[in-house]
Image 1 (tube, rainbow, N blue to C red):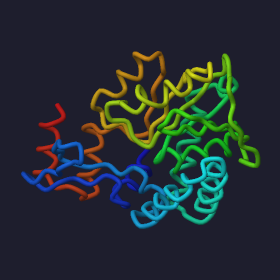
Image 2 (image 1 turned 90 degrees about the horizontal axis):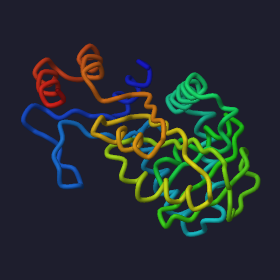
Image 3 (image 1 turned 90 degrees about the vertical axis):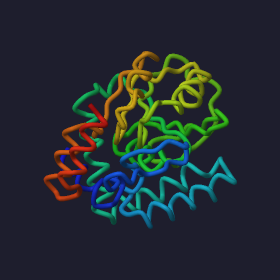
Length: 242
């Protein structure tokens, strides 16, 4: 997935710190890099503007899925970075999952929606929009119909996220919301796995996880080869992530 790595670096979706100058995260932790995977929307500016748009749409949940879909479809049709990133995930899903075993695609508030609606459309699967209050809305694949469903008993769901860290959103929001419908998340696909234990937590929930990109030595080697980081930064990252 070299193209995706290059897009992550090009858009600053993954940015590495200088030696001995770690990033201070909002969680209070420090990190040698930070991830804003939603920048794959095309750029930091476009991603930020879309996030503000999503916040506006949250005022009327019933119309949000279609409004989000219209925006991401336009971006898919006009932005090469975003289109190629989405196509890479669609191909990755097709290579790893028998889609006949998947009934729904799901995505959670808010950054998952940069990716899930358009992927559901391309895979011709209905979409479950999950909100952090655990409410849900179900749309057909082209988002011309959206409604609340009380039961999706026995249905199998493929959940897509922008980023996996420690999978707290899975255990707090996405899994409980889908279970409340009587359905089950069977597969998880992430654009980036920070390799910080989230994969193992997802597996413990009986979900099979996949990621287009994992933060590991191979990523650092690619960043070094592209002159994104220097040798000193590379050695620091390898020491930290042993």
